[in-house]
Image 1 (cartoon, rainbow, N blue to C red):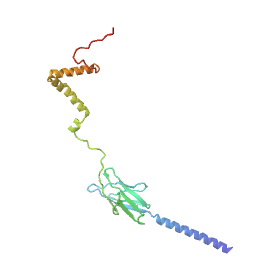
Image 2 (image 1 turned 180 degrees about the vertical axis):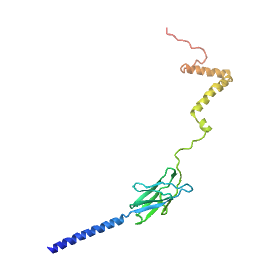
Image 3 (image 1 turned 90 degrees about the vertical axis):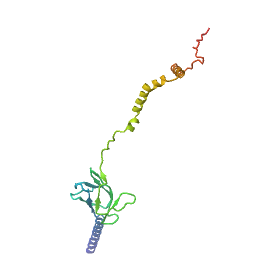
Image 4 (image 1 turned 135 degrees about the vertical axis):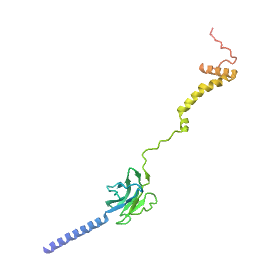
Length: 203
């Protein structure tokens, strides 16, 4: 009986030890790290901005001296973005414990993935522009306006064409008037000898 009890106790002890070792290995593999760095605004006074790892709950805020820390980040591959309403910031790819266990590496986004250095030093790419600059007056755009083209043609028709007609040869003017009369009469052709057409009645 004592042998059976001792054997049962030993087996349970070994199972508990194996479970503890497995848990320790899992905790070691999932060791969380901190992502830290500094933002630089140049001559502008430092202010608080938010930093976020896309697709995760991990976020942080910059301090008055520009430094920031995102704590307890699980191993994985993330995209770091800076949420700022005044400046546009480049995004970085952050490798937390994948390439090297217990280490954080940063890379510039792109096919070559150039190392960005760590701890991070972030600088803005430019000012955020939310409104487009209104263009000034341009004569070219005015002349290309269909309404202006229609108005110009109307002015030419009112003032230029009457002068052209007044200076035309009488015979040419007569031909133009006959053409207009034929078109107004339904497109029929006038007799060749300029005599009025005779009405033909049935007997």
